[in-house]
Image (cartoon, rainbow, N blue to C red; front, top):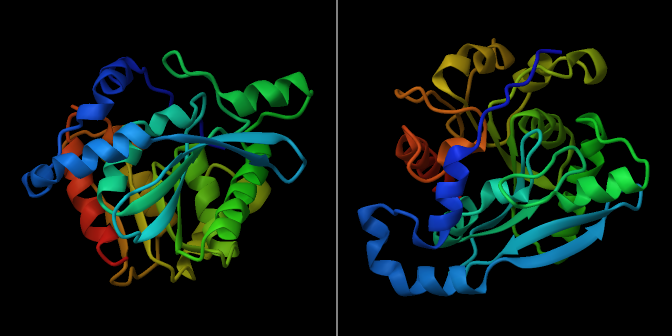
Length: 265
Protein backbone atom coordinates (compact mmCIF):
# COMPACT_ATOMS: atom_id res chain seq x y z
CA UNK A 1 0.00 0.00 0.00
CA UNK A 2 1.30 3.40 -0.89
CA UNK A 3 2.29 5.53 2.03
CA UNK A 4 -0.36 8.10 2.92
CA UNK A 5 0.63 11.74 3.04
CA UNK A 6 0.48 13.60 6.33
CA UNK A 7 0.57 17.36 6.30
CA UNK A 8 1.00 20.00 8.99
CA UNK A 9 -1.96 21.85 10.41
CA UNK A 10 -1.02 25.52 10.86
CA UNK A 11 -3.93 26.84 8.85
CA UNK A 12 -6.48 24.86 10.83
CA UNK A 13 -5.91 27.22 13.73
CA UNK A 14 -6.68 30.11 11.39
CA UNK A 15 -9.81 28.35 10.24
CA UNK A 16 -10.99 27.49 13.74
CA UNK A 17 -10.71 31.11 14.73
CA UNK A 18 -12.57 32.30 11.64
CA UNK A 19 -15.04 29.46 11.05
CA UNK A 20 -17.96 31.72 11.88
CA UNK A 21 -16.73 34.31 9.38
CA UNK A 22 -15.84 32.19 6.37
CA UNK A 23 -15.30 34.06 3.11
CA UNK A 24 -18.11 33.38 0.66
CA UNK A 25 -18.55 34.15 -3.02
CA UNK A 26 -20.25 37.43 -3.94
CA UNK A 27 -23.42 35.54 -4.77
CA UNK A 28 -23.73 34.44 -1.13
CA UNK A 29 -22.93 37.72 0.60
CA UNK A 30 -26.59 38.72 0.70
CA UNK A 31 -27.38 35.70 2.91
CA UNK A 32 -25.49 36.88 5.96
CA UNK A 33 -28.47 36.59 8.32
CA UNK A 34 -29.18 33.01 7.24
CA UNK A 35 -25.48 32.09 7.53
CA UNK A 36 -25.33 33.50 11.07
CA UNK A 37 -28.34 31.42 12.14
CA UNK A 38 -26.77 28.28 10.75
CA UNK A 39 -23.45 28.80 12.54
CA UNK A 40 -25.04 29.79 15.88
CA UNK A 41 -27.14 26.61 16.00
CA UNK A 42 -24.47 24.21 14.76
CA UNK A 43 -23.13 21.72 15.34
CA UNK A 44 -25.28 19.32 17.34
CA UNK A 45 -23.31 16.49 18.94
CA UNK A 46 -24.65 13.02 18.08
CA UNK A 47 -23.67 9.49 19.04
CA UNK A 48 -24.55 6.13 17.54
CA UNK A 49 -23.14 2.60 17.48
CA UNK A 50 -20.67 1.25 14.97
CA UNK A 51 -21.18 -2.25 13.60
CA UNK A 52 -19.24 -3.74 16.54
CA UNK A 53 -21.01 -1.64 19.18
CA UNK A 54 -18.33 1.03 19.58
CA UNK A 55 -19.92 4.44 20.14
CA UNK A 56 -19.16 6.87 17.30
CA UNK A 57 -19.16 10.60 17.99
CA UNK A 58 -20.26 13.02 15.33
CA UNK A 59 -21.28 16.62 14.71
CA UNK A 60 -24.53 17.24 12.86
CA UNK A 61 -24.72 20.51 10.92
CA UNK A 62 -28.26 21.32 9.75
CA UNK A 63 -29.20 23.88 7.16
CA UNK A 64 -32.20 26.18 7.53
CA UNK A 65 -32.63 26.27 3.78
CA UNK A 66 -34.44 23.74 1.62
CA UNK A 67 -32.48 20.52 2.05
CA UNK A 68 -30.78 19.32 -1.13
CA UNK A 69 -29.16 16.24 0.41
CA UNK A 70 -27.21 14.76 3.31
CA UNK A 71 -23.41 14.72 3.25
CA UNK A 72 -21.44 12.31 5.41
CA UNK A 73 -18.01 13.84 6.07
CA UNK A 74 -15.15 11.44 6.87
CA UNK A 75 -11.72 12.72 7.92
CA UNK A 76 -8.18 11.80 6.96
CA UNK A 77 -5.52 9.91 8.93
CA UNK A 78 -4.60 11.29 12.38
CA UNK A 79 -7.50 13.77 12.20
CA UNK A 80 -10.97 14.11 13.68
CA UNK A 81 -14.37 15.48 12.68
CA UNK A 82 -12.93 18.95 13.29
CA UNK A 83 -11.34 18.72 9.83
CA UNK A 84 -14.74 19.88 8.57
CA UNK A 85 -15.35 22.84 10.86
CA UNK A 86 -16.04 25.73 8.50
CA UNK A 87 -16.42 23.41 5.51
CA UNK A 88 -19.68 22.03 6.90
CA UNK A 89 -21.10 25.50 7.52
CA UNK A 90 -20.41 26.51 3.96
CA UNK A 91 -22.13 23.34 2.71
CA UNK A 92 -25.08 24.27 4.95
CA UNK A 93 -25.29 27.59 3.13
CA UNK A 94 -25.59 25.62 -0.09
CA UNK A 95 -28.54 23.62 1.27
CA UNK A 96 -26.89 20.42 2.50
CA UNK A 97 -27.15 18.88 5.94
CA UNK A 98 -23.82 17.44 7.05
CA UNK A 99 -22.68 14.80 9.51
CA UNK A 100 -18.96 14.89 10.37
CA UNK A 101 -17.80 11.82 12.28
CA UNK A 102 -14.84 10.74 14.35
CA UNK A 103 -13.61 7.47 12.87
CA UNK A 104 -11.67 5.14 15.15
CA UNK A 105 -8.60 5.54 12.94
CA UNK A 106 -7.63 9.13 13.59
CA UNK A 107 -6.43 11.43 16.33
CA UNK A 108 -6.54 14.95 17.75
CA UNK A 109 -6.45 18.00 15.51
CA UNK A 110 -5.68 21.42 16.97
CA UNK A 111 -7.16 21.12 20.48
CA UNK A 112 -10.01 18.82 19.38
CA UNK A 113 -9.80 15.16 20.38
CA UNK A 114 -11.07 12.23 18.35
CA UNK A 115 -13.59 10.75 20.76
CA UNK A 116 -14.21 7.55 18.80
CA UNK A 117 -10.47 6.85 18.58
CA UNK A 118 -10.08 7.31 22.33
CA UNK A 119 -12.95 4.92 23.06
CA UNK A 120 -11.57 2.31 20.68
CA UNK A 121 -8.16 2.42 22.35
CA UNK A 122 -9.73 2.18 25.81
CA UNK A 123 -11.63 -0.93 24.68
CA UNK A 124 -8.62 -2.52 23.02
CA UNK A 125 -10.15 -2.33 19.54
CA UNK A 126 -8.21 -1.97 16.31
CA UNK A 127 -7.62 1.56 15.08
CA UNK A 128 -6.07 0.89 11.67
CA UNK A 129 -7.50 2.37 8.47
CA UNK A 130 -9.53 -0.69 7.51
CA UNK A 131 -10.94 -0.92 11.05
CA UNK A 132 -12.66 2.41 10.40
CA UNK A 133 -14.69 1.14 7.45
CA UNK A 134 -17.34 -0.22 9.81
CA UNK A 135 -17.69 3.27 11.30
CA UNK A 136 -18.40 4.69 7.85
CA UNK A 137 -20.92 1.94 7.15
CA UNK A 138 -22.66 2.59 10.47
CA UNK A 139 -22.80 6.33 9.80
CA UNK A 140 -24.45 5.70 6.43
CA UNK A 141 -27.04 3.49 8.15
CA UNK A 142 -27.59 6.16 10.80
CA UNK A 143 -28.27 8.85 8.19
CA UNK A 144 -30.50 6.52 6.18
CA UNK A 145 -32.58 5.88 9.30
CA UNK A 146 -32.95 9.62 9.90
CA UNK A 147 -33.90 10.82 6.41
CA UNK A 148 -34.95 9.80 2.92
CA UNK A 149 -32.77 12.51 1.35
CA UNK A 150 -29.93 11.48 -0.95
CA UNK A 151 -26.75 10.55 0.94
CA UNK A 152 -23.48 11.85 -0.47
CA UNK A 153 -20.43 10.11 0.99
CA UNK A 154 -17.34 12.36 1.32
CA UNK A 155 -13.88 11.14 2.23
CA UNK A 156 -10.42 12.60 2.80
CA UNK A 157 -7.19 10.68 2.08
CA UNK A 158 -7.54 7.15 3.48
CA UNK A 159 -11.27 7.62 4.09
CA UNK A 160 -11.72 8.90 0.53
CA UNK A 161 -10.44 5.56 -0.71
CA UNK A 162 -12.78 3.68 1.62
CA UNK A 163 -15.57 5.96 0.42
CA UNK A 164 -15.05 4.79 -3.17
CA UNK A 165 -15.32 1.12 -2.18
CA UNK A 166 -18.39 1.86 -0.06
CA UNK A 167 -20.10 3.99 -2.70
CA UNK A 168 -19.60 1.19 -5.22
CA UNK A 169 -21.15 -1.44 -2.96
CA UNK A 170 -23.72 0.45 -0.88
CA UNK A 171 -27.04 1.29 -2.52
CA UNK A 172 -27.79 3.82 0.23
CA UNK A 173 -24.98 6.02 -1.11
CA UNK A 174 -26.17 8.07 -4.07
CA UNK A 175 -22.93 9.95 -4.83
CA UNK A 176 -19.34 10.27 -3.62
CA UNK A 177 -16.80 13.06 -3.07
CA UNK A 178 -13.23 11.85 -2.78
CA UNK A 179 -10.31 14.11 -1.81
CA UNK A 180 -6.90 12.52 -2.51
CA UNK A 181 -7.82 8.87 -2.98
CA UNK A 182 -5.27 6.24 -3.87
CA UNK A 183 -5.29 2.52 -4.55
CA UNK A 184 -4.09 2.09 -0.97
CA UNK A 185 -6.00 -1.09 -0.16
CA UNK A 186 -5.56 -3.04 -3.38
CA UNK A 187 -3.84 -5.91 -1.55
CA UNK A 188 -6.68 -6.38 0.94
CA UNK A 189 -9.85 -5.08 -0.74
CA UNK A 190 -8.87 -5.55 -4.37
CA UNK A 191 -7.89 -2.88 -6.85
CA UNK A 192 -10.21 0.09 -7.31
CA UNK A 193 -9.48 0.22 -11.04
CA UNK A 194 -12.01 -2.42 -12.21
CA UNK A 195 -14.61 -1.13 -9.74
CA UNK A 196 -14.30 2.43 -10.97
CA UNK A 197 -14.54 1.25 -14.57
CA UNK A 198 -18.09 0.11 -13.74
CA UNK A 199 -18.99 2.98 -11.41
CA UNK A 200 -21.97 5.00 -12.69
CA UNK A 201 -22.99 7.08 -9.67
CA UNK A 202 -22.12 10.79 -9.55
CA UNK A 203 -18.58 11.30 -8.24
CA UNK A 204 -16.22 14.19 -7.65
CA UNK A 205 -12.55 13.21 -7.44
CA UNK A 206 -9.80 15.69 -6.63
CA UNK A 207 -6.42 16.10 -4.97
CA UNK A 208 -3.40 18.33 -4.87
CA UNK A 209 -2.21 18.83 -8.43
CA UNK A 210 0.95 16.79 -7.78
CA UNK A 211 -1.29 13.82 -6.85
CA UNK A 212 -3.51 14.05 -9.92
CA UNK A 213 -1.69 11.24 -11.72
CA UNK A 214 -2.35 8.89 -8.80
CA UNK A 215 -6.05 9.71 -8.96
CA UNK A 216 -6.10 9.30 -12.75
CA UNK A 217 -4.68 5.79 -12.36
CA UNK A 218 -7.74 4.78 -10.36
CA UNK A 219 -10.07 5.71 -13.20
CA UNK A 220 -7.85 4.67 -16.10
CA UNK A 221 -9.98 3.25 -18.87
CA UNK A 222 -13.09 4.84 -17.37
CA UNK A 223 -15.07 7.19 -19.61
CA UNK A 224 -16.48 9.71 -17.15
CA UNK A 225 -20.14 10.55 -17.61
CA UNK A 226 -21.63 14.04 -17.23
CA UNK A 227 -22.03 13.64 -13.44
CA UNK A 228 -18.46 12.44 -12.86
CA UNK A 229 -15.50 14.78 -12.46
CA UNK A 230 -11.81 14.61 -11.76
CA UNK A 231 -10.89 18.15 -10.78
CA UNK A 232 -7.20 19.12 -11.01
CA UNK A 233 -6.43 22.54 -9.51
CA UNK A 234 -4.16 24.98 -11.29
CA UNK A 235 -2.58 25.91 -7.94
CA UNK A 236 -0.55 23.30 -6.05
CA UNK A 237 -3.51 22.64 -3.80
CA UNK A 238 -3.45 20.31 -0.80
CA UNK A 239 -3.84 16.69 0.22
CA UNK A 240 -7.30 15.79 1.49
CA UNK A 241 -10.26 17.97 2.40
CA UNK A 242 -7.98 20.54 4.01
CA UNK A 243 -7.80 21.96 0.48
CA UNK A 244 -11.06 23.73 1.36
CA UNK A 245 -9.91 25.36 4.58
CA UNK A 246 -10.03 29.14 4.76
CA UNK A 247 -7.24 31.08 3.06
CA UNK A 248 -5.69 27.96 1.52
CA UNK A 249 -3.78 28.52 -1.69
CA UNK A 250 -6.16 27.58 -4.49
CA UNK A 251 -9.03 26.90 -2.08
CA UNK A 252 -11.63 28.83 -4.07
CA UNK A 253 -10.71 26.82 -7.17
CA UNK A 254 -11.86 23.68 -5.38
CA UNK A 255 -15.00 25.35 -4.06
CA UNK A 256 -16.02 26.63 -7.49
CA UNK A 257 -15.63 23.19 -9.08
CA UNK A 258 -17.35 21.45 -6.18
CA UNK A 259 -20.31 23.84 -6.15
CA UNK A 260 -20.80 23.31 -9.89
CA UNK A 261 -20.83 19.54 -9.38
CA UNK A 262 -23.23 19.79 -6.42
CA UNK A 263 -25.70 21.77 -8.55
CA UNK A 264 -27.06 18.46 -9.83
CA UNK A 265 -28.66 17.73 -6.44
